[in-house]
Image (cartoon, rainbow, N blue to C red; front, side, top):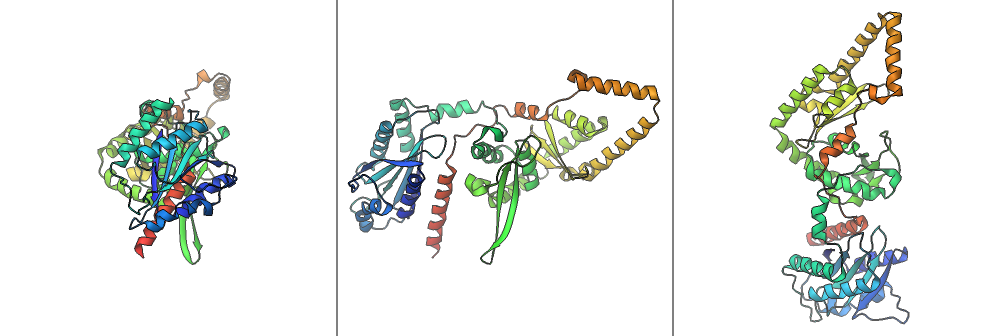
Length: 425
């Protein structure tokens, strides 16, 4: 069980958010406490707000008076409405809000049901209810509810998740937003990269890409980021998803700050020279792109190569899973730029072509025979999977995340922005 506690000065906005779930047939009111009841047990936002008016009128000086709590069991837990009602009463009672008016909403808009509790944190005399050691008390109540209702422990699950492999997105499995979120929101905790291009190189291994969008709105220049799922061929599939739906961490502003931090920490890092030596040595022993990528993959380094429609290489990025650093080729030095690799492999292909043209007819027949054998039996070829190496190298490093309500996160961020704007003026 995970509890999230939010505060704002916007009671109507908080009630409207939860009521919108009911209007979309993705939610319902499970119970009320010390609220003005209606004959048909159906409530509008205005009717709900009336129960809180005496408390807000008595409020002395508490700016963020509205309390918005969500209780989230594990997706595998099956919780009845009766148990949700008991949980809400138990939680509010032990957190000091048992005598407050509150309304409990059940949400079913994502792959796990959960409840939201809306109340106010000032009592009927207008005094703020103490929130000292709130997080510690909340965690204690959650552990008690896990035992009482037989729920999966969030603490034990966290340890188990550390042993799971971070999976790439498979658009055929559905639930694309959740799949993408588990990748996008975790990469910054485990890898360092200095640009959007390097970020995209890392994302591409997990079948995701991002694009910056810019435009003018009401005379002001706006910019943002959208994410796309990719298929196995690296082609965009489905509709773009706005970064805001994944939370602040996925935004272009946050990423650019992250890039700057990485530039400082990666500057002069000894890993850079070590990686350069490895790539140089592999390059000397490999005559073409495929053998080069296979050899580096065996050393824990993935290579992402970008080509134009004519097949010319215009970008190359190295993902070092040992140090968890991502390097654009040109950052390692001129010898590792996309242009250098394009020229090198193009020349090798020309030399190979000229050499092949000198072969006798019998030699050509022999080569074709070997090629056919490779097509018939994969054991004749030296193929290897870069992606497989990546997943093995990531085993146990990145935990899975519990399915998040990204609309809820987006709502919470908007409430915070509104409160900051009010304080400015």
